[in-house]
Image 1 (cartoon, helix red, strand yellow):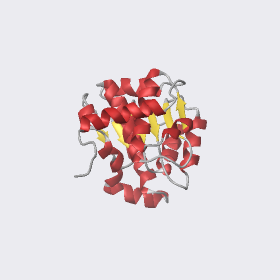
Image 2: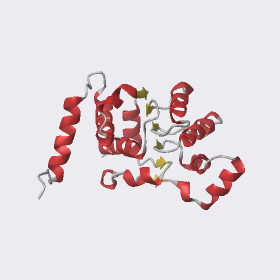
Image 3: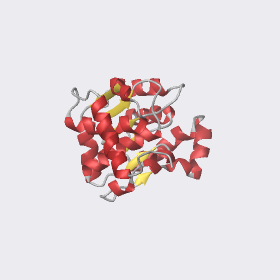
Length: 208
């Protein structure tokens, strides 16, 4: 038998204790701290704190929205599957229309990615929603485009697109957009579904 910790509660407790011990969280407000701790825990990289960008009180906006039953809109099934269902206590729907048959045709018509095309199907659900993007930079770009066109405004944007093409640029576009919608994002190429799901989980836990 290999010698390792097996108790899930002990693993969780010690993991979060180590995150708090190894991170300088002094510059963050209490609500931001809980969100940041879950983000670090999700990726194992304490240095992401230096690249987190905050717009408004995203923790409070997201928590309040989820407590009122707001939907959670995601760009990828991996984000949706990473959301801890036991934290979702207010009937919040998790919406990810990427597999809708209409998306592929719409993407072809628009000459864009399916992830971007799927964003157009978010419109009926956007008002007051929590948006979590953990994969496609084109989804974040398209969200910013439809918001500029007058689409309904979500309560909070959790923006963690990942990759080498467009990821850093899409997040800088969010930061520069001045939409007044609260957000958190991770500057640069890093991101991913685990981070987006972790952000949702932090807000959902706070709303529970």
